[in-house]
Amino acid sequence: MHKPDLVAAIADQIDMPKDKTNDVVTAIFDEITQALSRNDSVNLIGFGSFSQRHRAERTGRSPQTGESLTIAASTTVAFKAGKALKAALNE
Image (cartoon, rainbow, N blue to C red; front, side, top):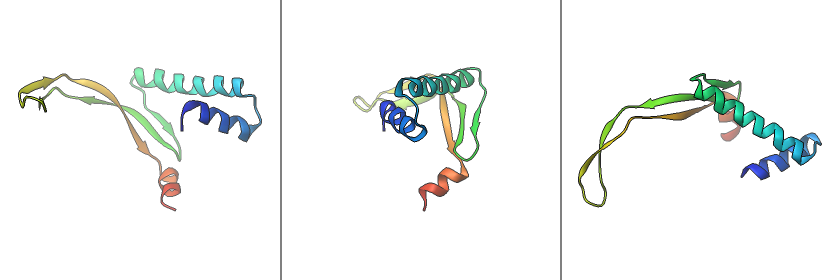
């Protein structure tokens, strides 16, 4: 499912115009992004939680040459599914 599909499904479910629904979905994604950039976690009860994870610098190997190289430290997003989401998937 892509964002336009999500917007269309939500618009049909709540009987709201697609352009307004798109604004709401975009605002939600923007707020999640801003919270994560401030190193705040986002907890959506029943759905799951988003948080920042730091990856330390590490040594890797080039698959083409087999040469060792250093992979820079980075920050990424982690998602942990909530109880209700896991239950819905396992029905």
